[in-house]
Length: 198
Image (cartoon, rainbow, N blue to C red; front, side, top):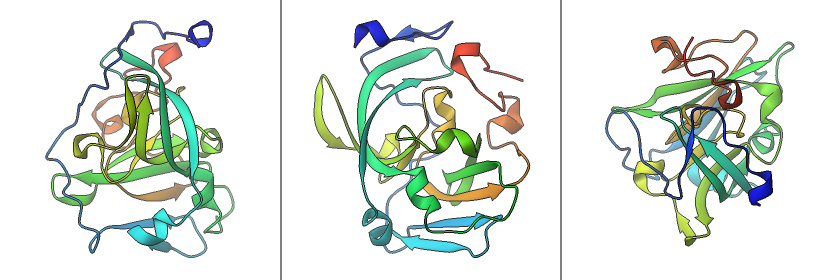
């Protein structure tokens, strides 16, 4: 494993999974939780928590790189791949981008992060509910890490693209800034190119 690790510039390695978020922590209520696929789609689809969790699961190991300069290697997640959700909808012509929405300060759709669609089709784009690493056996996400479900992006993106307390995916033809991008963070956020800010 060590031979494969690549630490992006300006990052340090940690065994811990630091917790960083803005606003309060979402309190999960299965009765009010839902997840909507919307935007440039032929027909919107909304899933209940039970419907979401019935989708096929994938286990994948992903490296995480936070813009605050920590990197954590070799965390294994179980979740539902982004591409699994694509099977539930028909996209309009010309969709190239998405925004992944999540909870922020009382609003289930208060946060979002933008990403290019083509980069999200592998096993390393997951809506995760549990994790493990060399120091922890399988455990559910902590509420502060995004319980019951958070998005983990491929390691070619800084972790702010990994929306916590997810609530939906908006499909877009043109790229649109999300929560942090509107405040001056990079639209593309590649840690290996140190794309922290615009």
